[in-house]
View 1: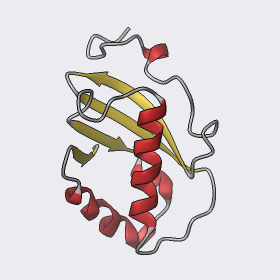
View 2 (view 1 turned 45 degrees about the vertical axis):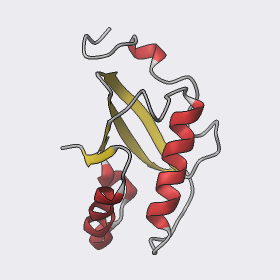
View 3 (view 1 turned 90 degrees about the vertical axis):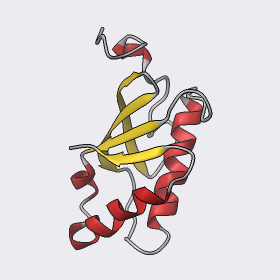
View 4 (view 1 turned 30 degrees about the vertical axis):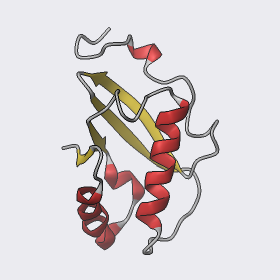
Length: 112
């Protein structure tokens, strides 16, 4: 058990991105004090970067968190996303990361 987590590591995630048939492979690394740390393990299907890419990412992320029983209003205030390089966005990565600032009811942050 990681003492920054409220839950034991094996209880942080009940269902995987693959089981949910998502495009992005999310993995909950830790949770505590309304802060979620999520590791990206790449994409589960080929998506080209375009003006809808960030919207698809957010839809998958919120669906993933809902299905893993994290309540939007109560369970998280900040979400750190790690390993963005795994998306292989190349020159579009900075544009993608800049869109993290547009979320209003929680902070979406790039994990370093």
